[in-house]
Image (cartoon, chains in turn purple, orange):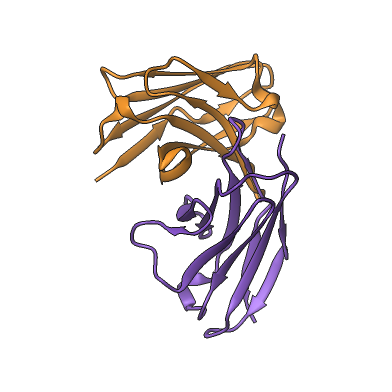
Amino acid sequence: DIQMTQSPSTLSASVGDRVTITCRASQSVDIWLAWYQQMPGKAPNLLIYRASHLASGVPSRFSGSGSGTEFTLTISSLQPDDFATYYCQQYLSNWYTFGQGTKVEIK
Amino acid sequence: EVQLLESGGGLVQPGGSLRLSCAASGFTFRDEAMSWVRQAPGKGLEWVSRVSGSSSYTYYTDSVKGRFTTSRDNTKNTLDLQMSSLRAEDTAVYYCVKGGDGPGVFDHWGQGTLVTVSS
């Protein structure tokens, strides 16, 4: 299986901060990577697919980049609604795998 | 509007069985691959299984292979997950998920149904 590793596991930031989360794959997944946001007690919500494509309805302050084994999710200016847990997920293989998650907390 | 509504969760003893269902609406169900994703309490997301639109292929994560079966009924727009030989580590919220830009992009999620395996 392809292993996905996110860093950091927890991130403390303030409203207005620029935030970057990194996701590394154990082998190349080309551009077949998605990012999700999950609020406490809620189902996840798709943010980014194909590494850099913004999903419908997602604010433009979210962006994704990378290819191969290293990817980043950037929030250009953190808003109160953005304090949540973020997951990356590869879908190159038929056996999808998620990163362990990055919790973005209020500093 | 896409809607995915899971049902069937509950408390089951170790070694027992349970069947989850997902009622889908708001899209052409037969055209989309569907997956189940689970989340143990306080833990991250884990993909469980996938079935193609025509049911011609299914995939399972190793930990449920041989114990879980995913199926769909395109005449009723329903997705099922039959779970047997349940273990404590299967305790989780189970989400029904629709594939989007390809089967591996989860663009719509149900609200989830909780399965608790405990004696």
